[in-house]
Amino acid sequence: MLGPLVLTRGDKSVVIRASKAGLVLALLLARDQERVSVDDLVDELWGDHPPRSALTTLQTHVYHLRRMLANELDVPHPEQMLVTSPPGYFFATDGLELDVAKFSRLVEQGREFLHVGAYEQAHTTLVQAEALWQGPAFAGIPTGTALQGHVAYLHELRLGAVELCIRAQRRMSRHAQLIPQLRSLVAQHPLHEGFHAQLIDALSSCGRRAEALAAYRSLWRILDTELGVEPAPDVQRLHQQVLAGGHGCLTDAPAS
Image (cartoon, rainbow, N blue to C red; front, side, top):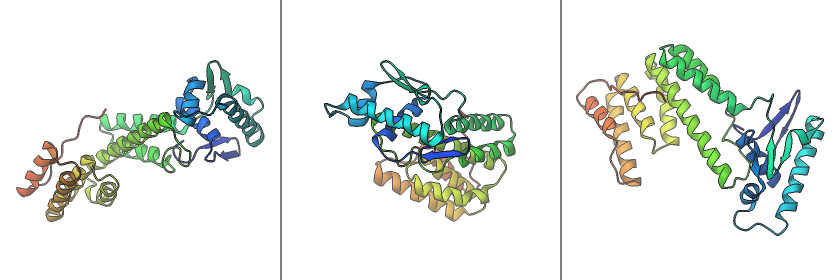
């Protein structure tokens, strides 16, 4: 799910293409073992304007998904994997490893390593977690309201993992190595003050005071133009420290 939607069984894989049936499967997987009602699926597929044939069409999508499981992945009893469970359906993931679950487990391990001061192990584990992403979550699948919400949730989890990984590298004083990554993150997420602050801190820690001050001015302009606000107080304090000629001293938020 962390990229294009792909199902793998043994040495067989199938990429789920953009379709209404793909959206049904994506939502069932996103809910992971949770029954999704017919009403919720119809709403996800057609919003406020379902066709009169919505129920029949949904059943057809389920039929085609089961055929795909049988024909492409050799699942012997696809109805036991994509299960009819009134008033809806669920996808039985018992015995399956979802990349989302593996990602969450690795991030939690990385957080624990960071908490006990095992920074090298934290960094290695969090890099492994990031490597599971092959693109935006559910890439290529048309999304309705519910799946959009889940995609946003996974995106926030990914950003949190990136921040933890950066924190581990800062604790190992790898400021210079962080600068290219932080410049890229700032460009991708211009309103994310945390990434800007990390960049200012890394530049200052490397003795690149002028660039650190320029990075702060860039953040100030972005926030003023886009939101009409100033940087957060902790970022302003970081700026004052750099202005005073000292190195940045960015305080990490508690790991959550």
